[in-house]
Amino acid sequence: MLHPDTEVRFINPVIGYGVVATKLIPKGAITWALDELDQIIDPARVPSFSPMAQAMVHKYAYIDGRGRHILCWDHARFVNHSCEATCLSTGYEFEMAIRDIQPGEQLTDDYGGLNIEESFECACGSPKCRQTVRPDDILKLSATWDVSLADTFGRFNSVPQPLWPVLRCQEQVRDVLEGRSRLPSSITHYHAPESPIT
Ligand SMILES: [Zn+2]
Image (tube, rainbow, N blue to C red):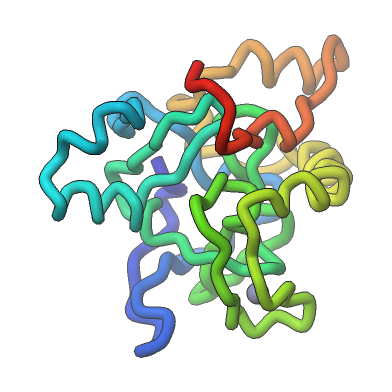
């Protein structure tokens, strides 16, 4: 489920639709959390889908660290890629704003962390654009993301968290907040293409 202070807007003819903040979303806020309504699809099922349904899975679902297709039921599936994303995935099944997201600004993810099936040429416009986004970018970038996420996590209790009630890993998050464990690395989400589905 995506943060409530968001909506889908038409960005431009090249990018198409995207998700923008309708109010300030502060650094440290949970921007998305896997919830009970999101579809978790075993990849073995996909070939039996109609071609149109298969195309939707390939366009809108991401692949989690266990190799499953996750199809978000809400407008989370319209979140675009940026090489300088506003949101990053913690080692758990939720994402956080790694900096303040202003009203009207897009929420973006780094698709290099979502196990994309093929590389794509990027035109995100960021000065830090990698030009080509690859399925295994996470292997190079997770250490940098983890530093950013650790800093972001420090804000967890200082900002409103409207998605807290849908978080499935509340206990684990409390353990991190209270110093009993460490935030898992974002590399947890990597799924090598040849790995078995778990
Ligand atoms: Zn880019």
